[in-house]
Amino acid sequence: MAKPPSLQILIDLAQSRTDDAARRLGGLTTQCSQIDNQLLVLIQYRDEYCRQYEASAKNGICATDWRNFQEFLAKLDKAIAQQQQALLHAKSGLEAGQRAWHSAHRTLKSYDTLAQRRVRAERERDAKRDQKETDEYASKAVAKDPTY
Image 1 (spheres, rainbow, N blue to C red):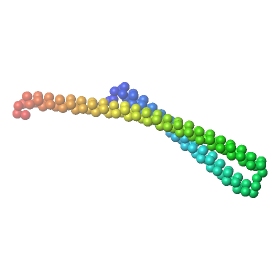
Image 2: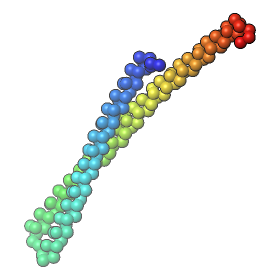
Image 3: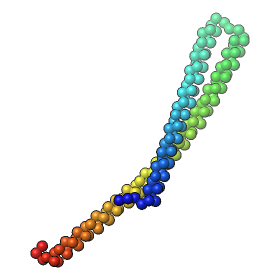
Image 4: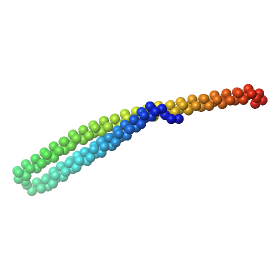
């Protein structure tokens, strides 16, 4: 049985919205992963920079080198803090994208369930109609030929 055009239109629209939400969710997941990786690189760079500086500082350092180290370390810390904020923002966007996909998917499933119920109801109606026709045919056949 064919689905009514209005229900099929709703299913197609819901499918399109679900697909769009899935694409956006994929992009948000990639973005979140990239930001997280960048944060890890910054943290690793800061740790390595500190280790190298400590190793060279064992022989003594001048005030200018110490100031330069402190200034660069402050810049790294600021970059790390900014990247952490970017990651929080990206995770928030990712959660919103997940909620949007779940909502669109739930709507699609609802329309699909309605379509399945409609098909099942049509089949039941057809089966009842066929059974009624068969019963009528049998009763007419018995009425025409009592030996049947």
